[in-house]
Length: 209
Length: 209
DNA sequence: TTAAACTTGTACCTTTTGACACAAGTGGCT
DNA sequence: AGCCACTTGTGTCAAAAGGTACAAGTTTAA
Image (cartoon, rainbow over all chains, first blue to last red; front, side):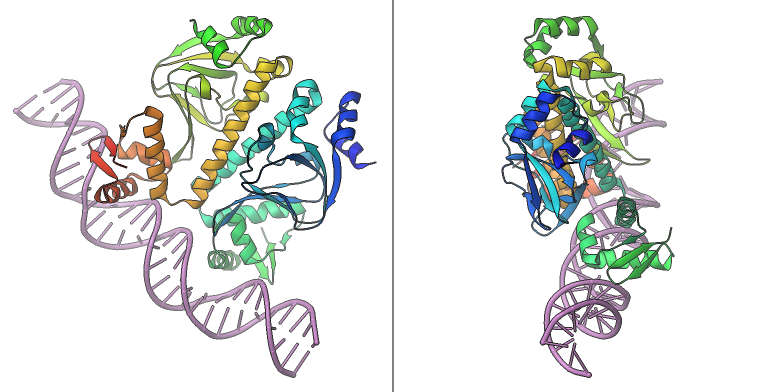
């Protein structure tokens, strides 16, 4: 199955006309690890749909970062879609975490097709809904949860995402994900370890419960 | 001009067929002050578009709240639209702050029309975009700004919204808006007062700069 | 006009989070 | 083995934020 066929299948695209458009306008691209797909405050010219690989989306300040979400193949394949409907700057950064294959659609078609083709409309709408709800949950967590909870939540969701109770990450990186500092993370992890909730190894965190 | 005509004008609805649908399915309602439009964890059956008045949208925990946004007449007229495309529970609360006139559309039409009528499509899409970007900015503020900054930001945006440098609000209410406690707000405001940035009166805060 | 309810100001203390500093551990690499 | 860069552990301190308590001011309404 070609990447385009995977895309059609993943998004339930049945309209032949739309398939033709996508084949004509979409650009298949394999991007190496650690490449920026979108940069904060830069203009967005493409909508990138991830076919395989993994993309990290975050916001940053001068000195601090906070993870927004990861973009995984097909099922969660929207990258700051909101920015594509208007000619505006990206509010986020997005970078590949591993080698990633994407299909890029020029932004002007994204909104055009969303009115012309039912399946594209469903795709864009659903993407918005999911992203919005996701963000709403993150917002609530940020507002109401303490950092130690957010750390363990992060670890659990990573474990889930990778289907493994071992998370390979340094304390520094973890600190960036949840928007705090390395020392705070080290202390929180030590606490969880003494509570037998995690086991710590070099650049490895194992979830015990 | 009737409320429906205001709606058509505000959303640039030109399709006669869509106007007919809205007149047929939409319900005009005037809601008194302090009435819930949407409740967290309850199912959403209607999309409410504000014609006049003011609606506050927030999230809450057991003991704490945090403001998400206000819904003002027409120009910002979307209420948790994301929830209307699927039969799902609301993640937020929404309550009128003053007497408010709304037009309610049953949720099943909201997504249906968004594919049938260009102007409705634009309306729903734009609502998503604006809400999403808004939330993203709030998220960033929450992640990176200290509470005293968020307090002054809140005051400035209120001043803007109401076109007045005097904000009528109690410290307790202000604390709820920004997700903290009354004492913290009192101390922050006193600090800003001694810095000649605000002037405090009973249930009134005047912005000086 | 007086009591009750609510609002504001603050002192004191605790907890949470962050900053700095440094020791110790780990994993290559030569 | 020895060196280097990076990672982890932790103690100390400071700042930010929250909790408790109470005094004093304001509004409302009986």
